[in-house]
Structures are given as structure tokens and as C-alpha cells.
Length: 199
Image (cartoon, rainbow, N blue to C red; front, side):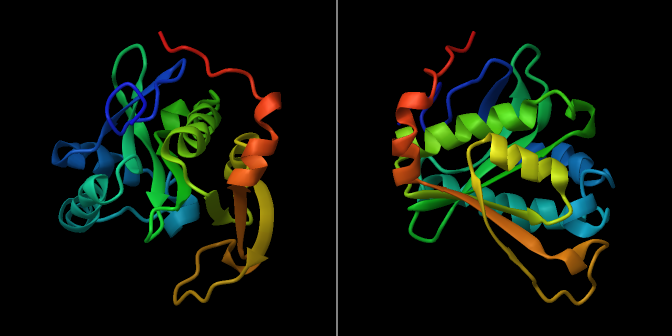
């Protein structure tokens, strides 16, 4: 498997990756406690620490062995090694598709890190892991994430509506799906610059 370490995406100019561990509980709880970070996910409601510790993290850690090369990684500052949040290529049941996702501390917003990390993961998903499709979803009203998806090379596919028992503001406008398929990735191979070598 490619990357700086087995099963890890290559580092970028400003980001490097590592697997999540149970030692990340506090950092993830802090991340999910920011109402702005959670605005388009839960309406700003924090994820309970027990949910992260007892449900989410154990599930994520098990995926590393189930689907080598895919999963969710801690995103670290390339200079300081500080925890910035996470990026994901969450695998489909058969591992042939991956859902792109990310969640970053608000202090990192506006620096282009979401786009930088997402582009790196898309390249890694197709060129190293060999998935057939990368896709992503967000609320229709989440313009910031929609721009990141487009800058990462994904294209708008559809708007759809889910039934929520307790909808959050903006849910009435639905959700959007973006995707990039391997044949489209191959078609643009000549247009892409070579991956930048990380420091």
C-alpha cells in the first residue's frame, strides 16, 4: 500500500495523516463540541462523549483491517503535528466505493486545508486503493462543503430529501450528492499535475 506508511494517504504540503486511536477520544469530543463544526450535521448539538468512546471510535478502528487503505484518519499539522481534525474515505460494504468526508477544527477554516486534504484523498483513492467511485453528501445549504467537493473534482449528481424526526434548520432544502467515477478520473489524468512531494 502506498503513502508515508502502510494504509495511509501520502502527506500533502501542509497535512499528514495517522490512524485514529482510542487515545483520540478527548480530541474528537472537543471537535464535536463546537456548535459551528456541527451546524450542518446536528444543528450544533455536540456528540456525547460516550457515543464517541463506546460506539464511533471502535467501529472506525475495526475498519482499518476490514478495508485496508480506506477509513478515517487524524489530520495533523505538517509542521507541528498538532491534531486538526479528520478526513475520511469511508468504504462501501464491498470496499469498491468510498465516501469522502472531513471535519476540521474551526481555527483551521479559511486556509484551504479541506480542499488540499480532499484532493489528496481522491487521488489516493483512485491511484493507490483502486476504488471505482468516490462520493460525498452534505446539506444543500452547506455552500462551503459543496465548494470543497467541486474543487476536489467531484460533480453534482442529485438533490434528495430525507425524513427527519427532528429536522435541523435548512433540512427542508434537502441533501446533495456529488461523485467522481474511476473512468472520469482516468479521462482527466493528462490534465492533473504530478503530486507534490511532501516535505
